[in-house]
Image 1: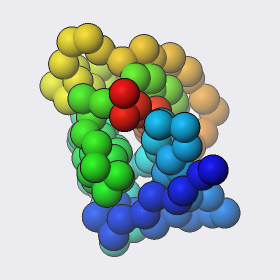
Image 2: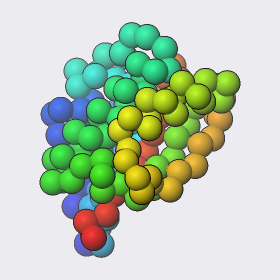
Image 3: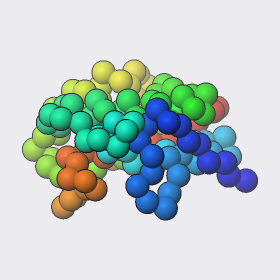
Image 4: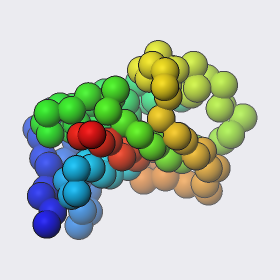
Length: 125
């Protein structure tokens, strides 16, 4: 069984997907780009964008009664891996040890011209 998770404290889905789905004790948060809750792109570079993305993920997880400390896996999509250190600096401020497993992938483009997108899987266990 799956249950949709939705909050007004993060941008609404811009396509046919849920902000997150809960199933089997896990919450699967869709990739978040740096839009504020009203759908406006955050100003600034990859640091500001990463901060907004992680705030969006935190808001979605909070709606499910979880926090970033429950995240077990993330996937980071970036349009320029040359900015990895800047993204990683912000990312590290949001996740304590033991850190989630993570993959980071460079992509040709992201929705709305974003520089970074992050998806997450959180566990209730």
